[in-house]
Image 1 (cartoon, rainbow, N blue to C red):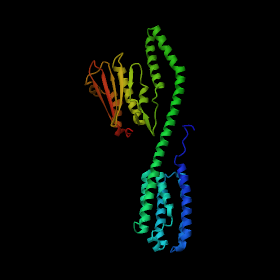
Image 2: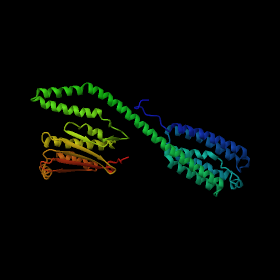
Image 3: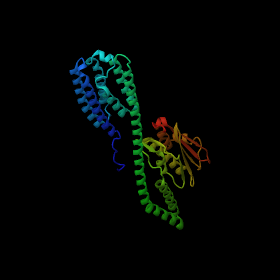
Image 4: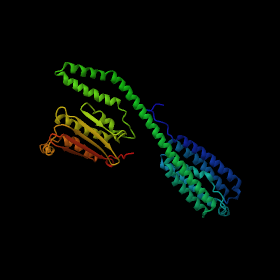
Length: 382
């Protein structure tokens, strides 16, 4: 199966199994009723209720097949039908049988809506549905009979266990799909890397080598070719592809494109996942800071980019060993209307809910710190 194709809904087999359970449970209820219907106060009404449950089982099973339990209306209707089938037993059956603790008319069929809630909403949904059906059972009995408690325990256990198993199943399926996407991305990166290595990188290496040999004005071309070669090698050899979890992007990959002879990128070994828009804005702010270094730090300046990720925030430090600047330079630039650094860097971080700070002194380089709280980004660290 190609990773690009959507995988089959992992709960589809569970809905089919639930449809079979409904049929078997209803057949069991009908068989039991056939042996005791003459003891009911209103025996014809019991057959009508069972016929109604048969029609409902067909309708709701088809609905679950189509919606996979995403429609809350079907789930609520299913649960209310089960409650009604339990409560109507008090009107149909003989009072002495009810007091003796005989089974309700639908018997184990009422577990079907509980299982449906467990499949659709996990263990919490299963527990909720079990509690509702158990309450109906108590009302129908009028007391906590031994069989009532027994049925309640079974319903709660069924809802909890099946719901918990479905939650694990969904997480496992999500992990599998993520692995398939990563594998597909890795294969594509390797394919592109082979093409770049066989073409572009070799040409850049040749330009760099020949430019240095010739010297003069071509030496600058050789330096630029060397920087681009290093950046490309970092990009195609990095194992940190863009990992997507919903709309999350690995910030490390976006920053890796800025690595060069004069720029060193240091990042955590694990993905730094942020919403795609936040990651793109942070990467753009880093690019603007690197542009400032290239324009103002002086020739030969080196820049170090450090990425830190913790439970509270993602912090990026951009430090260079260039000429530096006085503490009043940004204030003077803002007063003179030169707001490039403020608009490109500080403005981006402010819009994201973060902040950007500068630390610099003449002759000691400049450090820009970008800090984005994870609460502001909307993505907590896993």
